[in-house]
Length: 181
Image (cartoon, rainbow, N blue to C red; front, side, top):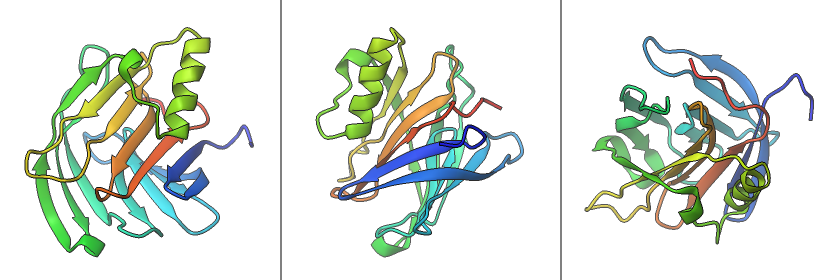
């Protein structure tokens, strides 16, 4: 990997991609939005480790706008709500409240995730603890929760989100974590 570039590895069932950071936009009073590209014209946009948009795959999310809380005691900034559109699912401008709970690294399930397993094993070897947050699922939703990991300084290193109950995507920052704004 070119040390002058930043990389993100993305996985979904049956597919994986190494993505490179294309550009960063910083909306007013919000965390920066990173746009990641791969060689197959797939595009993933993240904001503070949360998926903003995804194109080039089935069940893509065209746009997401988050409402952000103030950073917690560890410096992690989590969203409290989102408005998103998912045209393949006939969802347009749906607004949902988000609630996250911290989970101990020892309780992170790595069973079905190559990236999560690799990350947890690497942090154990380096004796480093990540801050993990799990989204509490909506009572009326059949879509599983999302899961996110941050460094001890609040920078995102891992994210996982489901687009449908059968289609999930996860990503792992492969170069230095994106610095906080």
